[in-house]
Length: 285
Length: 255
Image (tube, rainbow over the protein chains, first blue to last red):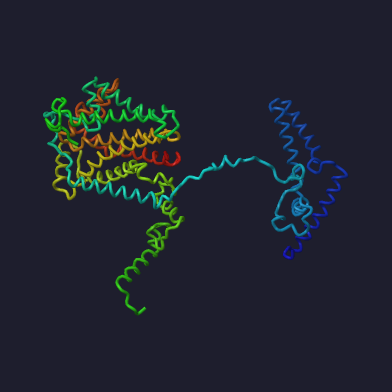
């Protein structure tokens, strides 16, 4: 209490007295208070502009009514703001009558706003909106079992990449990449084979027209793959719930794997079917 | 002060001074395991991920089941790692290779015989490429068998199929570059199929080959596609793929 400066206490006292006087005046005279007291004047103004607009016929009536109401409110607020320097501390006291002279701390004094900012029933705050908890944060009832990425995941990734590098290094040390004779347009090797991942398609070439084998079927294959998540409406990811999907996909993969294996190892000169253990392997990576 | 330090003490002293120096601490951000006084705390575990450009592709924490090797078999990560290995070995190969009919094949032969580690790096590039095609295929199979393409991950599966296609294109364009009999005729078989595309098949083939038949133009075009265009495109799609993994709620599962 002792640290409140003398002049502030004095001002608060003055404001208190003034507010009490005003309250008495309001109770006796105008039933609603200052902001509304300003309205007759504003009403006249509004009526004038209203008639003007009516004459020009441009602005809808309800908008004019709204703007005149706003104007009136503004005029009221302006009146309040004019008194503010003197009444600043008083308002805080007025709002909290039980607080006494000790309450107007510097923060309380800093609170601005004349009587016009006080809403119905003396509320100084307005409810703008209600934000439900779930709309900002998705509060999960069941916590997920998690572990730190470092070290648990990164160590695994590091080991995997080391093993991969080591495997590739050792494999490349001992197994040479093929480099056949220089390309020669005049010497067609027999058989001529595509890279291994296209050998399934080349295998289809023996059965279908090139357009079907080389364009339609692989195009359809990619299209079907893309559509997989949109056609599979089963929400479960449990293997026992999706036997059909798994079966279908396994057949799809096996179909290509078998074709690639046949194309790689069982096709000899003229792309004729051969047994690799009889005629040897006609295949290069 | 006057007591002489043993070599071991001197080494630790130097290490401490280095790790405590301003230069060192300006390089390694807080939480780095290379910083002085790194300790294993939840805070530092988070910092390791957050304060690293590379690691922050990962979330700070992952689902426990996602760490099990038996769930992912590391296939997606290995595909990405192989892509990095292929980029590194590929850059090495680019120093010694000219994509013309007259020089391509002899450049590769000289690389194998006359360049230190040339043979090894070429082998690694080739086997790594085949391995990457394989791991990408297996990754796709793994994702399917886990039903990981289901909502909300449908679109990431689509991106994945695009990545598979790009991987095959990268491999196929690289197949021509050694300019040996294997390359020429494998690509002949492949591009003949493209020529059968309805409506604009012959035009597509002509644009791809830069000619009616495979030749120097084809070599240059496929070289540019192989070392520049497809890597550029695949990196963009990989970025989206990895980003979507996190945006779609991390790795799928558990089953």
